[in-house]
Amino acid sequence: MKNMKNHTALLNQLNQYIIELEQHYAHLKQKTLYNKFDPMLFSENFQTVDFYLNEMQQCLQQLQRLGEQDRVQFVFFSEKLVSQYTALQDAIRLLQKPKSAVENKPILNKRDQLRQQIELLPPREKLVKYYEALQALNDKLYTQENQLNLASSDMQKKAIEQQINITKQRRERCLNAIELLEEYLVFKDSLEDD
Image (cartoon, rainbow, N blue to C red; front, side, top):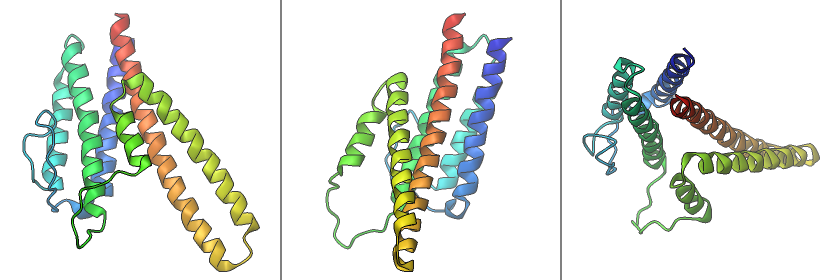
């Protein structure tokens, strides 16, 4: 019974993330993504955002059809869906970045390098890093709010408010990633307990 609740909770959470992704990027559904995805994630490259969202929906439908006896398949498809979510979100972010006139080989800044290293970690280690990132964002937000209180001009206040909004968005994404990973780990642990 406990597994079925975890099973259902994870399905609901994954469905909610897909819905939020569809709503957040509805204006980009017809945009083509020129990314090469891992063939284990998506069946084709260079398709529209809508195409990839549909593939995620198909993966979710496969998950919903699986019964409790299909644990190995359920873990596989849930990991695939989480990976699809992350890959699609990253690709859309790249799509939204302004293009430069000269195409250079991307040199990753320190934060992007760290992000790539974290994505390669096993889930439990990744969760620890996510919590460290959340703490850093909370500290940054606290500092920015103090700066806002000390700001003397309206121009300074507006600039700091923009920084606060960006930090809050990053914090929200971090919380979503933590929540999704925790749901996955709870489900995976419940499978190992049986």
